[in-house]
Structure formats: structure tokens, C-alpha cells
Length: 450
Image (cartoon, rainbow, N blue to C red; front, side, top):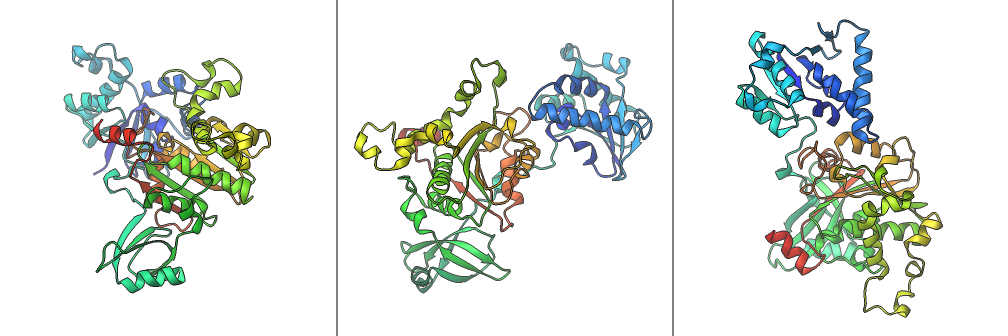
């Protein structure tokens, strides 16, 4: 039996194509949604663009028929706008007075349930609205499209027990063939079946249905980059994926202090300034303000960006040794990067740091692009970023799904985890989940206890 889905505004702001994602069922948009879209469309960020996109699409659909009676969609579904019935609105509990827009959506769903013979489901990404709907006897669901099971998120790491001669063969020839099913570019830890302390690290090079070729880690991954050395096996795997130019997309997931951003920046600098594999290191992160937009900050663009980009600058300070009281001036001058600093790299055009607000519409060729805090992006926003990548560009997405500031996404519906799951079987991508914090004993302990 066909269903009727009543959508909340936040569903369309999260995914502007949501109207067409309910197969051959009926999709109902309460009139109050049009009013809310008009309010959001003036915002400059992705939310504003999504609101404008939905408004334009509804305007185009208007030419195909009466939007109140319903317009047939190409997938066999029906889309219509529903008006709120005043009498139904008056039946809502007194506790709900004052929340006009949410009440109008609830009233539309209640009216449909009263007269419709089919199953009526309200879809919202607002947890409280779903609770209210349930209290009123309505069926309510979260928007599940693009969601992943965060408990089963692909880690990019496998541990395999093998004979000791397999490990010896890897050390001798830097490559082995191993039976079993693996994902492309998956990190594998080989453990001796007799002596568990006898181990080796490898990356899946070519994977087939029954056997795969594994190669030893890049020597630089073991030695470190620009003085930044891996402190655990996940960091070694991450360095190997970052150093491999044949893998244009790398995702690094991990809690605070696991070294995601630091490793990405160190390799990016190495690739741009030492190996000259890319023309520029471009670092970006979403600007998720706590109630205020970036435009309200005083000063020029550099001064506006400083509070948002300071975590990036902190990583440069660590790489350049600027914050280490033990480093002498002579020691810091041993490497040319230390003498220049990130400001000089910016002046020379080797480094660019900017918010994601300005990335739409660009083509980014031959660059090492790092998108930090990618867990605050929607799947649609990540798609926009990845489609900006031109020929020869490597994209690195880093983030912690447990630290999300955006109001419309969560650990299961953000763009970072979505990309990890969708690309896990693609040879163009590599992923590692970093689990051990290396920032400091205090930071690691705080993550565990607090």
C-alpha cells in the first residue's frame, strides 16, 4: 500500500532532492514550509543554497499542474502542498501554543491521518518534533536517506593471522599474495599464528574475489614527514595513504588528538614543497558559527578567518617547532620550512587557507586539498566539494563523527561517514579510523573519562 509522507523543512534543507526520494508514494509539503524556505533562502551558506534550490524546483513544478491538487513525479510519486486546517490546529494541546510552524506541520499530518486511507508518516530531522508527533498519535521518522550504521562504520583496517613465512616474504620482497576478501587500499596487520609478537604492516594493492596482493608500507610512512613521526600503526597506515599519489581520496576518522589533521598537513607540505607533486596545499574547513555568521567579525578577511582557522595554524606551529621551548633557533633553521613559516608559504602561493563558503563553483586542479572537520558537512556538501577536484588533485577529509555542531546532521548522517561507506570498495579511495589519542596523556585521559 502506498504511503503519505509529510516533510518538515529541515529535511529539504538537509537534502534539496528529498522530495523525489520517496519512490511512488505521496509527498506532502505543509504550506508553512514555503514560508520557512523564504526565511532561509537569504542565508549565504549551503542551507541558503538548498532553500533556494527547493524554491526554484517547486516553481518549475507549478507549471506542470495544480500544486495543491498534486503533481505527478517522474518516479511515480505525487507531490503536493497542503494547507493547514484551522479547526485541526485548535485541537492541539495547550502546551504546544506558540510554536506556530511546527504546529502547522503537525496539524497537516493529523488532518491527513483523519481522512486518508493510507499510512501517514511525518518525516523530520527535528528530534523534538518527532517526539511531539508521537505524543499526538502520529507516526514519525527521521530522514534515513544517506544514513550509515555508525556502529558498523568501515575502519579501513584488518588483522589477519598468517604463517611466519608470509611475514618473512613481505619483509624480503615488499609484496605478498594473500587469500581472502579485502577492500581496495585496505590496511592489513599480519600476525604470526605461532608468535603473535611477530607482525607486519601492509596495504592492499590489488584485490580480487579470492586473493589480493599486499605491499609493504612506504619507507617515508615509517620514517615520518617533516619531523612528524607515526606513534601507532593507524598513523603509519594513514601516512602511507596520504603519501600515495595514486589514491586521490583519503578519509581519516578519529577522536580528538589522534593526529588526523597534523598528519594530513605534514604530508601536504611535503608533497607541495619537497616533492613538487602538487602546485598548492589548500586547507579548508566549514565555518559553523554559534549563532553568528563569519561576516559579523571585525577586520579584513584574514582577521575574520583567524578564529575559525586557528586549529590549522596550531598544527603549523607544531610542525615548524615554533611552540617547543626546547628547540633552539639553530635547530629550527635546519629545515627551510621552519625559516619560512606558513605566512611565507601563503605569500609564495604554495599554501592557501580558506573557508568552504568560497569553494562552490571552483575547479581545483593539481592541488593537495584538506577538508578539516568534515563531519559538519552534509552528504550533498561533500559531493559538491569532491566534484570540484580537477585533474591531479588529492582530497583528504578529516573529522570526528562524535563532534558535530551542525543542527541538521548527526554521526550517522554526516558527509564524512557517508563518503567512508560509499567509497570503501572503490580503488580511488583509502580510509583509516584512528583510535588512539597522541596529543598528550592528559588529552587522552580526558577523552576516556569525560
